[in-house]
View (tube, rainbow, N blue to C red):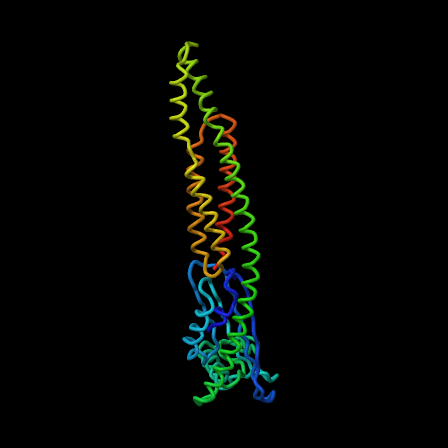
Length: 315
């Protein structure tokens, strides 16, 4: 069972986090080494894993990627492994290369008859002149397996720390999402109450318009009621409200369940945005109730957009 499977099932993870783990050899300072694993993650649609490994660690790349994939599902992840000597004498001069550079410079000077002196600082800046005295990698299979055990343990420690940070950030995100979902639920209740009073408003508007067209002539009340009913039917948003509230319940259920829910939440928000747009298109007019519904629907769209921005960072 992986570390992720041991976590509480209702945990939601943010894709943003940073962690670091260190270890060192038990040998003396003269030939000892220090190992550090650093991991940084940000949001991404899929898992995009970038590795930065020391020279000689390429043999561990496949296993490192496997461990990370078991712990992280989505996100842009940058993992850096540092392997350094613990001794103070960490810099060496590549003497053969220095002599080769000097000989090449002398040959060029003789050919061009240029009178130039040696620039020691410039010489030290040439590629390969200064090299780090890094710890030697074990050459035998047993030594490499021991190094991998140390590296994998350090990697797991860093991933566990990263999970803790991402889980904590995810908890804050979920709390904010719940507040915004509750706000949208209140909007739905307000719109439902306003929509029930639209039918008489449609009748009043029709009555005024028909009187204007007919020059004040009498209007058949039955005909007026029929036309008002047709107009109200065209502007009925009860189905949109039902679907929107259903999406809200599904959204809350996904948050309660936790896990890898980011893509599902984003899909639900797309559907919620569609219902809000339909409500806007179905409630034209200048009646007080219709204008109020338009205002609430615009606020709902704004809340949904904010939700979508935050959901992009949930795994």
